[in-house]
Image (cartoon, rainbow, N blue to C red; front, top):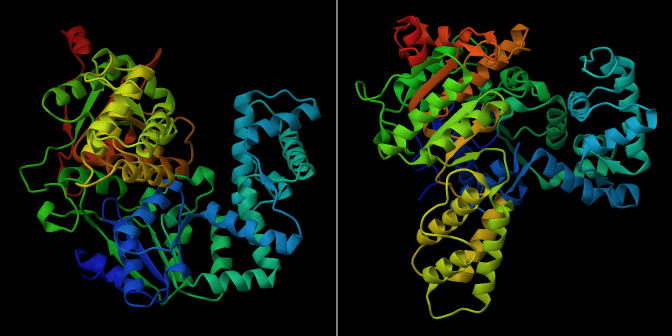
Length: 585
């Protein structure tokens, strides 16, 4: 069986080119991770690649874990699939003793704490919120490869501290860090890049080790990450970048989509493949997404796959006349909006839809609280994305330890009954506790572990299952909880759900109030695009006419996706809230 089997024509084209520069422009839901892993597997199968000489880099530990897991499923082991930071840190720790004659510096775990200590030494008392903003500025400065002096020429104002104090505090932070012989997260990349630039033997060793590079989410690369990538490459040209300019949503953190958009300028002979067949979303959802991004740099024109049978991955039925048009609902207040969203979700669950298939996405963390309260009032359990990781939950750690202990002293009860007994002993009951709160979260976590056991292949032993849980924890391969997901738009990137509700589409919320420039509003538009393209089957958008005492207008993005050159009616308007209708009467 070939690694190219099951790929569509464009995916196969992208996965077949194993040498030279390759750019895969992959729209949302077009199978980019599939292409990355099958391309590497094809290279290994054909002998073009030695696994240990392949480096695949991405931006999150979870994404790197997914790459490793998919490669293992394709029978490929030994590939270095890491984040930029973990790859740089591994090289730094390996080469530092040779270069410096000492162990590598320790990595600080809390930039804000050290900034506070530097501020104390200066006699300053900035708030914790101000310190967090300063920490973000330091991160942006470093990934943008700016010295403090260069930063001084273009620094952005921060509430609670004067410009000269900000510069002095940054210098004090760096001095304190040097005195303690420590590095921060961004220093890892800077130090690794500096080592490769100045130590020819280190560069030669890295170039000998890694011959073929794949970079996922290339639209999110910062100047510093791009420089490090150039140093890893040296004068070689075997690089494959994968990305979507329409999903550049981290410009505030230093991401620059120009590296993706200008890839062909740097490599005029590059193979460029556009993936535009979407296997996730139904046609009306894609129409809204395309309308929002039409004419923007690097925008792709997504087309539905035409049903699950039409493509290599599970698709969404996009046949004309079947798919629902996205809806827009206006509410009087944010409280009304939260209640309306909760009521719509409760109705869907009552109709048989699993809570795990539903997500509510919003622009800012603060929007989650009223949504959680409204859903809890209807008995709907929720999980907030970006909260405690599944395998870091105390209930999960207890369960894994309990199962490992039971594996050491096996009984005659059998695999599944033993798993049930262990979990019941830790608090799993037949019926869940009342929705909301830590008790319900713990119950859902234990129930997720039981479902993994129930779905395990025949013949699975307790020891094998416990080892599988440990491997999942290492790769951050979390099981799905049967809860409604609440998430910011940023945290939802890379994920998908059958049913998505987008809340807070009002001016001042999306685009957010401080997005005052064309570039900033364009970033908000890309955030909106990411939200839309998370939905597979249904999409519901809502906004409120007031926030506190202030009046609000609908988001300008609603007008943009409400009409297009393909005609009107992409969005189906929904009647205003009952309270407003009653007042009108």
